[in-house]
Each structure stands twice: as structure tokens, then as C-alpha cells.
Length: 286
Length: 349
Ligand SMILES: Nc1ncnc2c1ncn2[C@@H]1O[C@H](COP(=O)(O)OP(=O)(O)OP(=O)(O)O)[C@@H](O)[C@H]1O
Ligand SMILES: [Mg+2]
Image 1 (cartoon, rainbow over the protein chains, first blue to last red):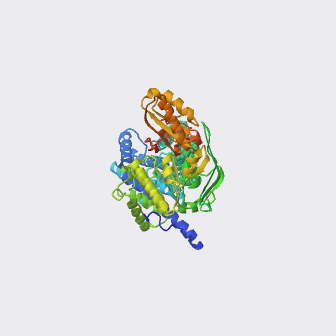
Image 2 (tube, rainbow over the protein chains, first blue to last red):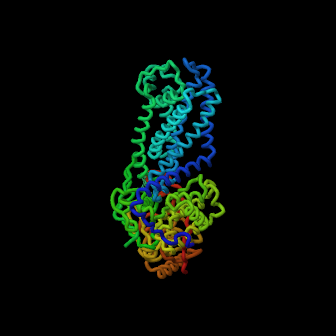
Image 3 (cartoon, chains in turn yellow, green):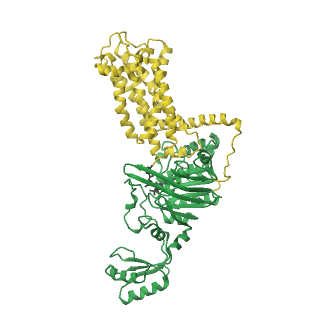
């Protein structure tokens, strides 16, 4: 069985001037390999695709059809008002998948396998967050289509609409990094999901996602106005041209939602990317 | 120069339930081309040792070198020359066997085409050609193990770390795995493997380090370890269990230690200094007392005996004791292979 080991490899190191370019291209290649591997999982486990496709459809239909008739928004149709909120809620929840998947990989020993390979260590995390961005993008397209079907229209032009979608996905991407770190620290996929729901339900519901913040009781209204999810929803709503006339903008995040989202994304990435990479380098299955 | 060296490794885990010295000053030195067996009971520190050497964890103290490269200072260079397979098969359930190996190849930067070729080669070498295109999800434990081991060979490593490579395999797959490992060794690969099976260490390892409580407590070839225990064992099987007590007394008379064997059981055994002489005397005494025998004999000590003597507890449950030591100190029950290892018993009379 000389195929097993013949010619022990003494990997020749690349000439120095190529090292930087080489490191960058292997980093890209490694990131792509892991992304490919994660996407395969989506393809091969139908339950996950089911989740990514049917859940958004369900949310859009449930909220628009159940509450559409009851909730009156001054100066806007409820379906139009709602859609940015549903989109934001779905992509934020979608990011928790990063954490559960990371914990799962850790449990199955795949992280150990990756960590004994001479690959770029951040590639596993890049691959993770990339593939979850892809999954969230699928959900996004499905939701947009369902939204159109129930009568949602954006009124601010196509480029603005695209910008709104981009902003939602950007936020979800940054949030995946938070969940990735959590996945490595908590280590149990089930716990991650439970913990995420405990945090994300209040975060998405005590916001302007489903009703205007002003209609909430005063303490909740204050929370809602400073809630980063509200800024995200408000940005998308503005960009889609779905903001009702009577909306009160008396806090900075609601006054400048897009700036707030960009700052939030930058802060999350600056904090959580290095933390995740550091955690990865010392994580091993038990 | 040894190709694997560990010096004074210490690793301490603290948890609510207390502090565990997983490694308590472990030293190891493996020359090139050797199969070194790390032998030890559950929780001895085998996995921890391997994980320090294959760059997965950093020790709290001590140093380690692989092929002269400092594992702590330059883990990335170590990763290029080693292959590692962990205690539990690490394979992606959703990828096929081939895809799993191809992914590993690409992460070794072999390039897509070369990775694909290497994957096909390995799948064939491990007898998985027919299953190679199926998702690993549907693989048996033994097939997963083989894919996992194949993953450790993708870059044709000179140094291979295998943590309990045959745990969970049926006897036939275990033999197959032994064969594979032996072939690798013939090619000149240095192998560090851990096992709880004395028989496995005996069959595969050129040299064994017995680990207990985070330290190497004995080392040598299998024969040397057996010799440390010395002497012979006299073994008798009674026709009538009622004679057990009397037979025990006889054995105790000539043994250098307490006779072993279940009370009231029909099989008794005792360590003796002068095997042939002791056997004759035991047989004479038994005959005088009209104790009838099914079988009687003498054997050299096995690694089991060596282990028992060295650590004060059996290596596995093969002695009919319950497997209480299979539970980690922190109370986690471990999945282990409950098939008893076949034990060798040479009867010389
Ligand atoms: N990540 C960890 N956290 C806490 N304790 C740990 C951790 N890893 C290992 N230990 C403890 O360290 C000790 C040595 O563990 P190790 O896994 O090295 O043993 P082992 O010899 O491989 O045992 P086994 O035969 O069960 O695989 C055990 O008591 C174990 O419980
Ligand atoms: Mg172990």
C-alpha cells in the first residue's frame, strides 16, 4: 500500500516575496473550501432548507393575514409597514444558526480536524459566516417574493430597495459573528438555540418591527427606540419607502437609522471577529 | 534525535467538581520510525498527551517538539508534517467519503485536482470504493473510522497521531485497522497511538509507555514490561466449584501473591516464582486432597498482568470486574467498546 505514505512530503516553503500573496490566496481558498462544505450541508439536509424557505413564508403570511386586518397604522397599509420588520426578525433569527452549527462541528470533532490542518485558522469562521449569509439570502428572496404576493410594494425606487436588503443582510452577517463566538463558548447546539430565543424574542418584539414604537407602553417605548433592531427596521422601512407619515423620531437611532446600523455593524465586527478567532485557536472538543 | 519529544508536560483542568491534573509532568521521547503505544486506563491522560503534540491544546507547563519543531511556538509548521485522527471519528456527515477527503486535501493546499486524486487513492486503499460516493451519514462506525484515518493520511505524513484507532470496531475491523497501521509503519511512518487494549499495544507497538494519572509510570517493549512482572502464573480449573476454598489455600501456599479468581469460581490463578516447580507441587497437593481438575497449566505473564501490577488496577473489564473505572472522574460515562479483548493464554502443560 505504497499509496498511503510514499514520498514523505517535505513541503517546500514558497519564496519570501510570494509569501504575502500566498497567504492571502490560501486564506481565500480555505475560506471558500469551508463555505463549500457548509453549503453542501444545506443542500443535503432537506430539513434545513425547509426551515430556511418555509419559515419566512409562514411568518410573512401569518403576520400580514392575522394582524393585517386588526392593526391600523396611520398613513400606511399594515402589510407595507410590517414587511421590513418581518425581514429584520427573520435574518436576525437566521444568524443563530451560525452558533448552533459551530457547536455542532465542535461536538462532532470537525473543529479538531480543521485545527490539525495547516489551514488559515480564521477560514473556518469565515466559511461559517459566509454560508450563513447565503442561507439568509435565500430566506430573504423567499420573503420578498411572498411579500409581493400579499400586496407589499416598495415605493422608493429599486436602488433604495436593494440598499435596504443589503443593509439587512449586512447586519445579519455581523450578528453571525456574535453567534459564532457564542457557539464555541456554549458548545451545545440545543442550549444555543434556547439562549438565542430567550434573547432574540424580546429584542425583536420590543422594537418597532411589528407596531410603531409610540404605541408601546412608555418604558418599552424607550427600550424600543434604542434597540438596535429598531434602527435596522427603520433603515429598511425608510429605504423601502414604507415609513408612515406620523412616525415620531425623537431618539438618535431612529433619527439616523442607517448611520446607527453601520456603526453597530462596525462595532460588532471589530469586537467579535478578533474574539472569535482567538477563541477558535484554543477550542477543542472534549 | 527523537522525532517526538515531550518534556515535563503539565495540564490542569479546573471545574466546579475540582481540579484534574490531566498531565502531571509527562515525558516522552519517540525515535523516528517507531510505533509508540500510549497505554493507560480511562482518564490517564492519553488523549491530552496526543492533543498537546498534535497542536490542539497548549499545556500549562512543559515543552514539546515534533521533528525538531517547537509545537507551542510554531504549530502551523507542525501541522504540515503530521496526520492526526482523534478518539472519535471526525467526519462530515453530509459529505460523501470522497468529498470528506477531498476537503482535507484542499485544506492541505494540494489543489483541487490533486486532492481529488488523493481522495480516490485513499478510498480505494481503505476498501471503501463502493461506498465512496455515499454521504457518510449512512456509514457504519468502522467505515467512518476508516475515512477518519484516511483523512490523517492525505498529506502522506511522516508522523501520525492516532487516538484509540480501534475503539468501537468489531474484531474483524480491528484486525483490518492493525494491518493498515502495520503497513504504514513498514513505509517508515512514525506512529504514536493510544489504546486501552493491552493486546493492541502488544501487537502493534514497538515500544510502550504506560500512563496513569498524567505520568508515564513504566516503559519498554511489551516483553520488557512483562518481564518486570516476572515469573509465571499457575492456572487451574476445578471440576467442582465446592473445592474452590481448599484449592485456593493450596495455591496460596506456593504463590508469591494472593491467588486471583472469583470466590467460589472454578478458575483460579496465582503468580509464582518458579513456574514448573510450583506447578508440580500444586498438582501434587491438589491430588492428595482429592480435588479434581478440568485443566491445569502455567503461563507467562501477559501485559494485562503487567498493567495490573504497575497501576494497581486492571486495564479493562476483561477480568470480569465491573467497568467502574470507565466513568471519568467528572462522572461522564464514556462510550466504550464492550467486547472483551481476546485474551491469550498459553498453556504449557
Ligand atoms: N476539556 C476538559 N475539561 C476538563 N477535564 C478534562 C478535559 N479533558 C480532559 N479532562 C480530564 O483530564 C483527565 C485526562 O483525560 P484524557 O482524555 O487525556 O484521558 P484518556 O487517557 O484519553 O482517557 P480515555 O481512555 O477515557 O480516553 C480526565 O480526568 C479527564 O476527565
Ligand atoms: Mg482518550
